Length: 371
Image 1 (cartoon, helix red, strand yellow):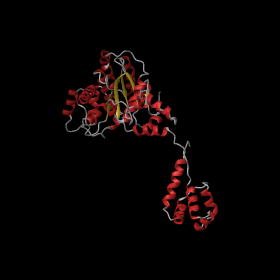
Image 2: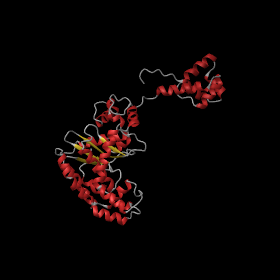
Image 3: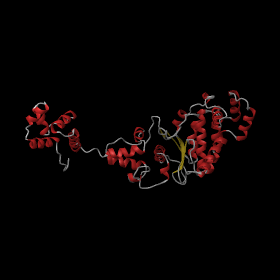
Image 4: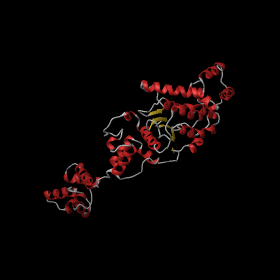
């Protein structure tokens, strides 16, 4: 308790009794209670309950709040000092989904405040908690301040994991060369398992990390150094069309060397979102490359002109066969262009996560945690 001086409310009662020349038995008579109850309070053995506070207030002609406040102040002063890690956990949870990060194994659950601070600093690659982005006392302002905390935590998890992937020096020439090879994988869902190895041969590190709740992340592109690009997908939507579109989208970012200065996080933008012109141009280029990779524009225009009145599943299957792609890719493109409703032909949008996860060197999420 240190040097705190604790004054029990019974001291006040004792002084009042002396001032009025009452004995403890007199007060017990007035209150209609056992003398032992008064003795226990005066000697600091028992606290003053709300009922007793009201009774004492009548006896001494004062406010009952006098006694309740005295008791509250005494109890508060006597209470143990709280665990210092509470303030650290409050700060972190107020800015980051800490409990979810612990659940995912990104952080260890500890009550040691110093260890907790060290963990967070290490996770974000800084030497001190004051330098962690988004925390109220963060010393440095950066690009990260504009990124929502759940997305930022996911990004740093990806960055930490990507460093563990060994890959040859990146070659833009090789990456462009394998695009036709990737294109040939669009027909059969099971061929998706070849993607990680094909990318790795070009020097592109590829991993899959499940997004945190409400982060709405689809993927990210960044560079560990000049020769080490990284692509990570969240598999937020487990559909064949989303996988291939997002993958080719991120590949285009790599080809353009987007993310070499600041990570390019691809997320679902809400209506009315304000996007920097440079970012918009970058995203438009990546979207166009992804769309063209799946369905050449002239082929799509011809298909739409031939099926203006009604697009049947049969016509989609024939078109997909002609393009040598899975029907789900055609349906995904048509849905994205709002040519057909999102609820249409959903059975063709097959799931692929379980097909590719076993082939990826590093996967984090869905019960799998690699540190």
